[in-house]
Image (tube, rainbow, N blue to C red; front, side, top):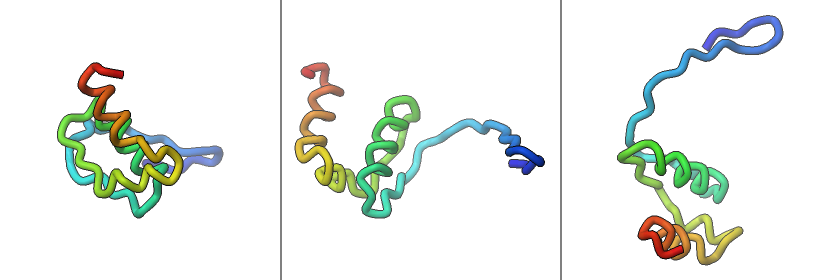
Length: 69
């Protein structure tokens, strides 16, 4: 990224799989799950932290991925 006087110029790069760190933050875990829909190989470090806002997140997410939601 290059900083400009009024912002930044960011050159996109191809995303790839890997460990998505949540830092024990439910928002980071949710973001990683969403990104994982488009980027193969994303592994969420601790998806259970999503229970802070949606206790049944993991079950709901798995059902959605199986086409049962």
